[in-house]
Image (cartoon, rainbow over all chains, first blue to last red):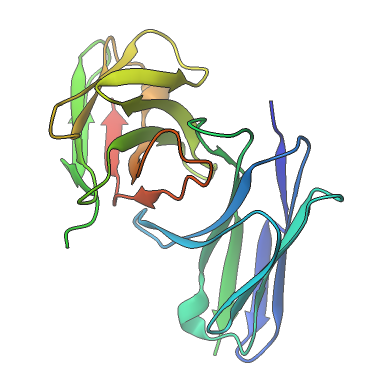
Length: 110
Length: 115
């Protein structure tokens, strides 16, 4: 069973700061997901990656397969980025459900 | 293009009752996964349906059962409700159980409260 750990659990920063959220997992994976969850529950998929780096707007996700580690970066953070960011992994090929971390609660203050 | 929809949005039940939650996947998607998210925790995988069959299951008791219909929509049934079943239940849809890259699209969730 894959164990997914995220850090930090809570993060408060000022608008404009560069944000880094980390995720580590214990067993080899087929894909890693970064998800964003706003109050009320809705989850949005930000990235799905299995190697290297992906960028979308101010968001950047990287993964190091050998070290079993991924990071989510937010550049020029904004109060609307405030949300819970969740790392989740597929532990094998095909249909297995995702294994989730507990999430990082991010608050960006104006 | 409608995304993943779930009904109802909120539900209050008492211990021992039974509940049915519903999910309609994103258009074109054929695989539905269900997750339980307790307050302050990350979601936990319940099970996944493809071709109207349960393909994979997480560590949940048999009180949790499901169904997938020919139009790919799905139901989650929970019998003999316990206080600990209070949670946000999330449905996610994806394309093709056999896909190695299994990007999932999530619904807004159903908030279940058991009194």
